[in-house]
View 1: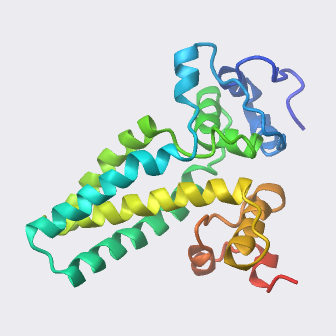
View 2: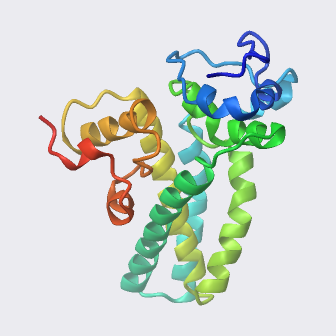
Length: 236
């Protein structure tokens, strides 16, 4: 049960409250409030503004960077086939990162004040308020910080001429991920792949939260055995 010694006041800024839940945080954060209202995180208006991002901001900001990165590899001298292979490789790398981050970082169990607070900011808020449309995609400022180690990793792993293309492919994968994630929560697909993915992701939120970590596909869940039981069956 939620810690009776502390109750989160939903009418006040949330971020610096949730840490006080201690071990009860894990249960509290997975009791979703299904509302499209955007809760307040911080008392400071500027910091609060930076936590809210409309979905269309993601492609608007990052697709030009994708194009520039891919063009950089083309300018260095990669052939069209090499360039396409490089971008696809970056996309594939992203799918594994998408799964790994979601499973091992976003769903890490916490109980200390600061661990709970940080987890809530990174992902817990999404499980508590799954229909909050302004906190479904990652804020660009935070993404920029994370892109630095991602770029350095690619430079370490890939030849110099391939690195920008791989980076562009990975960043394209991220854009597809965030836009897909938003659509799975707020779109209304009636059939096909998008319908199946929506059901699969809603299952992760409302039924089996320790399974179904993929967003854009179920591939890595199948590989690592974290596919929710009913997701392996054809929808009726």
